[in-house]
Image (cartoon, rainbow, N blue to C red; front, side):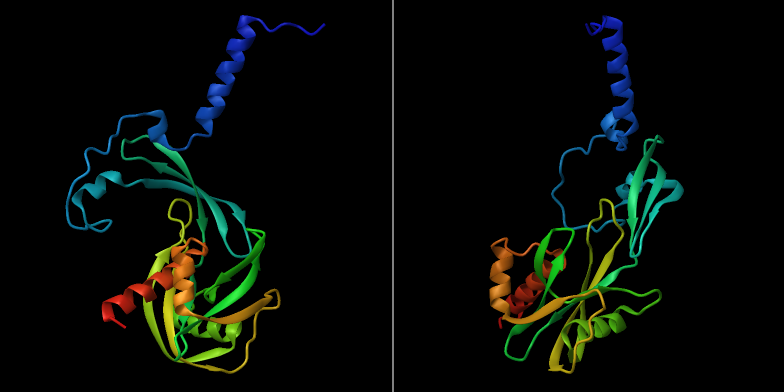
Length: 235
């Protein structure tokens, strides 16, 4: 017959579980509730780093070690000192950055690529994009990726915005450009890229974004920028 656990056995197991939870709980505020955000303030927009109070939110990295070195990105572990002078741990994806291109035809269609994404386990519909090579200029990268993925070259290429894809754990920045005056030359995707290219009415993509049928963040951003610009210009 199996031994019946004693009270001391249960207490020891409970203490061990509590220690494990504390060891893997990296957000200090969850363990030490000594910071409150205060009542929300009605004010004009103030960007990060421009509010004097922001200095009291900063975390100061003490050490940084590579946990995983991949083909495209690394995963690093940082030990940081919190604003309350306690220490915590942050796991961060270090990424070289990327570009994305909103490529518009003269008759109001947008260039989209169809590609199987292993992380999601399905084909997605996205604007053309690709990662920066070391030291590469984003505009040059955008020109290269547009040609490689779609076979298109653009007479004009204009910067739209830069987005941070997931600020909670990743430093990837995607620089988004608008390409116009398109003409087809020849595509040249990477050896491990298998894609098809569609030219879709921009209005249909915007509707799909607003209906929640497009999940890719760079594509959502590009479509909504086009929609906002068209409304501001009344076109």
